[in-house]
Image 1: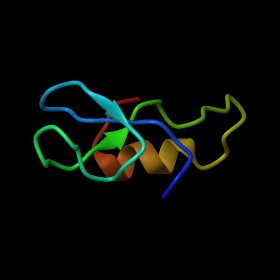
Image 2: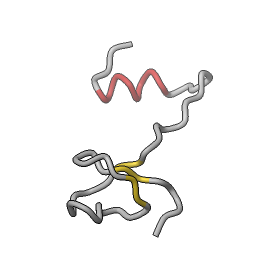
Image 3: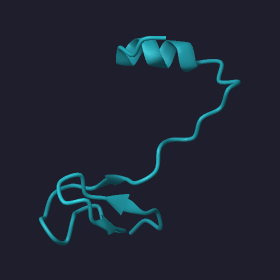
Length: 53
């Protein structure tokens, strides 16, 4: 079990488990990924995901 807080996108409940105890669906990390303004590879990562710059 991870110590990171997770959230179910269906019913918005928070848990530490990878599966929601209320609906049984998968959970996602509750917090966004870390961001660094000096990210040298960010331009390529955004292009690979199809995000506009």
